[in-house]
Image (cartoon, rainbow, N blue to C red; front, side, top):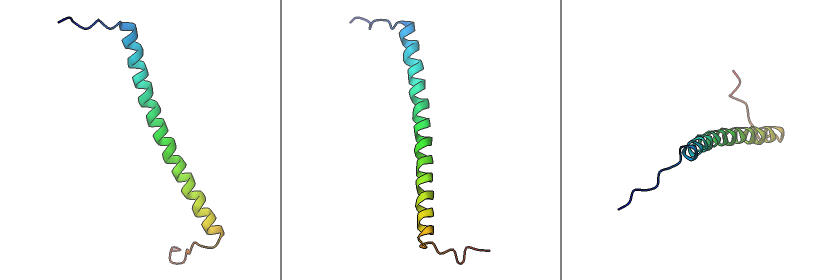
Length: 61
């Protein structure tokens, strides 16, 4: 049985860097998706409120 070929250190460094970059981009994407959902919910609520579908009685202190 032969040993697998050695991985070039430069190639491995690039793979490691890109793996970290992908992880960072996935976190950014998740945060942006969450923000998008917040904005869409706020827009939907504002439209419902403008249309008079939001009853705020009982919410006022």
